[in-house]
Amino acid sequence: MHRLIKSGAVSVNGITTKDRGFCIDPETAEIKINGQAVSLEKYVYIMLNKPEGVVSATKDPTEKTVVDLVPAELKKKNLFPAGRLDRNTTGFVLITDNGDFAHKILSPKNHIEKTYEARLAERIDEESLKKVAEGITLGDGTECLPAKVKVLEDGENPLIEIKICEGKYHQIKRMFAAVGNAVIELKRVKMGELPLDESLAPGECKILSKEEVELINK
Ligand code: URA
Image 1 (cartoon, protein in one colour):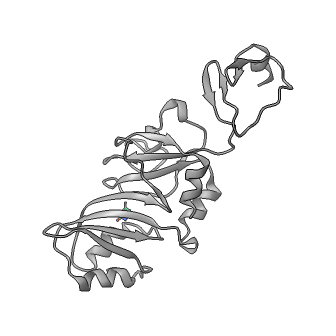
Image 2: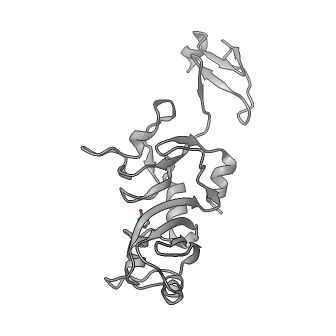
Image 3: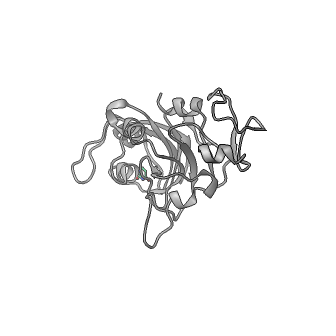
């Protein structure tokens, strides 16, 4: 960094400085290296609107991963998805380099709700919704914690909002399978209190502000 400053590559709030002792306000300073904005934050938190057909992994020998979708200017070392969505599930994936934060928001003990919208193959009755809400036992005997469910659209292929604090393998698909239904489309629309930014097209990312990151942790 010292060499970069000396070479005149670094600007602070639009002013190039060669002074290594230059004081900045880390909360507000806009730092650029060769015209490219850089962050002073220790960790980065990226919201991705995951499209279908992409795997929730950092690297894969054959498949495109959610980390592959992070554009070069946002890329940092050690990025990984905090929690997995199935290949055909869409919506909010948090990509970060902060392992402690990921662990905190994923642990069921911390009761951070993940909100999904599930389109079902069949009509669903009150009794089935109640079973899902009360904490259903999956086909293999795995017990789920209670979930919050709400019918967003009724009919042949209802749309159900479902909030869970766990992340068992194919959990939502298996919860509805346990009441004889099937999920035909699944989208994660919220993590904690932070909704997916619907202005992000599928495959697009944005860096989250401190305030947005705090909303996940609520
Ligand atoms: N539950 C599922 O079944 N799939 C997901 O991708 C996420 C939650």
